[in-house]
Length: 286
Image 1 (spheres, rainbow, N blue to C red):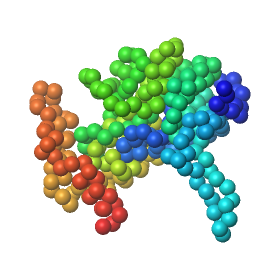
Image 2: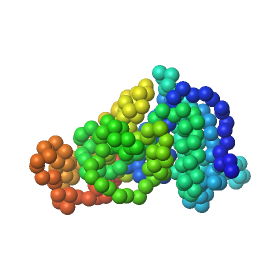
Image 3: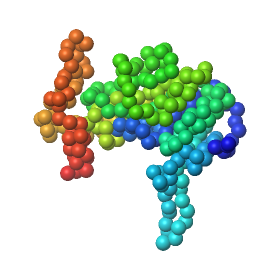
């Protein structure tokens, strides 16, 4: 059964495959911002288009209808695409973009892994972001999920054992473990109180992490400029509330403290939802 259409048959030179699917955890829209930046800086074309009817639930992800003066002029369907391009240094890049599949994950993983092996992919790199008890006044740190210990240690990881619901990126990582293609997920740690608003610092960290891990020529200067502006606006919002300002100071102290010192007790902090709601009101000018 053919579940995709090949639009271009190109010979590639050891490409990097970037997993950029939406629909799962993306605090601060970090991954979405990074993907948008990547596609803006690296011109791409559609190489493969998947059959949405095989993987997408159109009642959960409805197509968009375009109406002009009451006339239905067409639908825009959610599409999963494998795009191909080159970074400024001439290195081949594949980007798997679109909605996370709603169904038939095993078939999807098998198909993507087979494509990657056939095209000679040298590294698979996923992008994501999660809320964490970190302050916005410190650089965004990345945490890895990976198929090899070397990749995990190179990026850094959250220690210990953790069980959590998985996105399709995790399923793809598991699929690549059965091949010789290494896979790593880059996860930006976003301040929990900024998780519901665009947080460009996370996007910048993901782009810079992708460049470092995959050996790509990528510039995050635009994202850094946006991050500086966002940071200033968060500073202004927090300065109006002594409790929130104290929370940020405690997060800073916890991050800066030595491992021998006890961590802060999160029960003594205002909730991220409370601060996020106040930030949103501030940014709306309320």
